[in-house]
Image 1 (cartoon, rainbow, N blue to C red):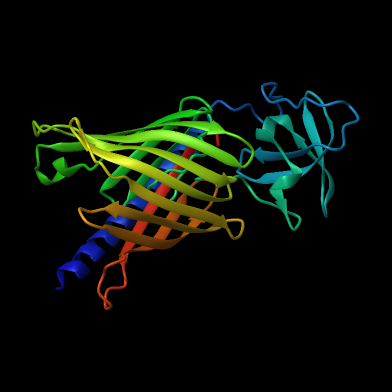
Image 2: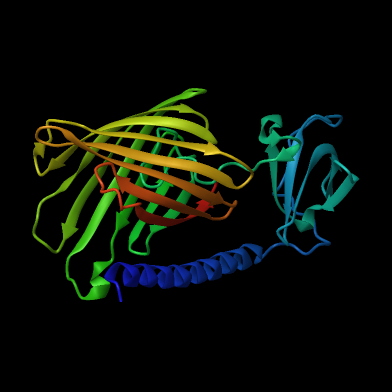
Length: 318
């Protein structure tokens, strides 16, 4: 069998296994989240809405214990129930004992009358981050082609820290490549700036450190944005004299669909080389899948591109 085809079949099988375990993880987490929740007849006083008695302008999304969501304008609330005015259904009253979460939503989150939940993977393209910060307490796990693993956590609303590895020890190799991913962001309404790095090394090899220090500027919001990044690679204490340039973007097409591109210009001794990519992201609230083709600019005419397949599980606050 063609080695490239064999590799892709192996990756697809691995992805099926990964998604199966990921689904089991999500189901188990959901089951654990329900543990200790009061019965329907009991009132849950830990969830509250701050509003005036006659406030009919605030819009809320209520998620119940069975995972269903109800969105509408607040009519009234008390210690035992919350009543929303839901379009096409009128007033809907939900007992607090059935409520899992209550979230206020803004008018801007509605597109053509339909609520668009927040982009669950708004701070990263295929691999490269933009300058938009993660929210404090949010975190996500990202896997690319089974072998490349990252986890990132929002320590504050401006600073996040991530780590990644390729578990080659599973194949009997004693060395373990790891990398650390710090990012600090400055934010405004539509312009975001960040500095960060990819600080890498190999445990068990006796080698030195290598990585990349970068700065990024992003224009746009969490749904649609364009980024320009400039970074300098290093090995031990030696930095490159020419920068790596990254130009990336994303655009939300629908409730769950995004177009993504991530492109690089790498300096060489006398010129430069480039890598371009184009992809599609399917993003539900609890997971996302990236499909893309990555192609060197200097590739031969018969070469279409290298397939990219990544899965992200957003967790915590988003």
